[in-house]
Picture 1 (cartoon, rainbow, N blue to C red):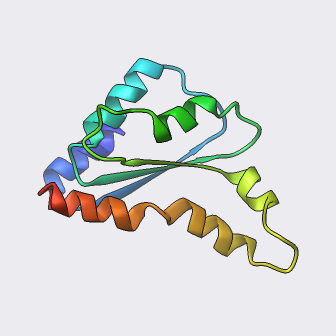
Picture 2: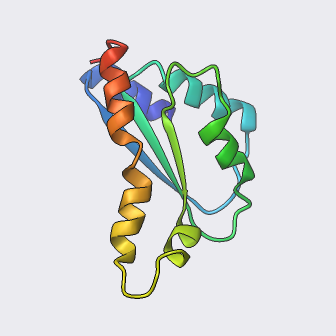
Picture 3: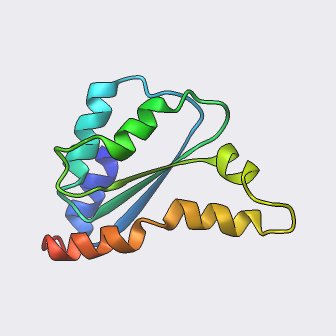
Length: 116
């Protein structure tokens, strides 16, 4: 997350950071601080959880960090999304929708906050 902040500071453009995670974070405080810091830049963070988790902390990051300037974090549990798609429906499209559904609102807020 912090590397993306460095890149955005130089490029002064919008970025979507996609992180594929297979387990819990090792440093909760550092991760929370990085997510909050990233909310002061034109960055959207999408975390895709693969495997069995546990994912409770990722869901907290998604919903419960009020210090952020805007909701810049989207957590998508890959297996849960893919297993919820009815037979005959496009699972790839359902996953893409789940992963990107908050991007338009995040981009609008980034513009509103004057980050771009």
